[in-house]
Length: 156
Image 1: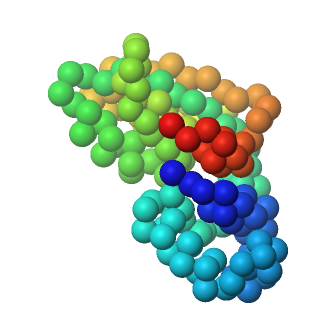
Image 2: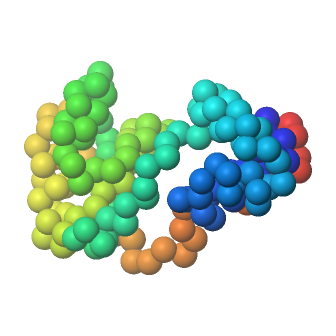
């Protein structure tokens, strides 16, 4: 669970990713030591997963974003995940329920490049089938601020 201070701390850090502890404490109206202790606690609990910069793939030459659903051969999940992990353009892989076994977030330099990536995925005997959808636009970018507010407002 998050309390109101944890939530405000995270929301402020998301709005100002390069903010220092002293300025963060000033904006929140608490002591610097309180901010530091809260950050350590949130990091140890796994609430904060990293402090690295968010990289815009399109700005480094990968303007195509696609989602590939994969059907995996029975008993070959580990092999499939190993193959996917070796392909740098695959940013994330999730295990799913339903027809697909895995859902991959993939970036590419062009549609022919995306086709090459899909061919590389299909070259693995662990992967039986793919279904790929190209994202045309981002309607709601990744966000957690509404979730942070909801986590405080409605404890479960």
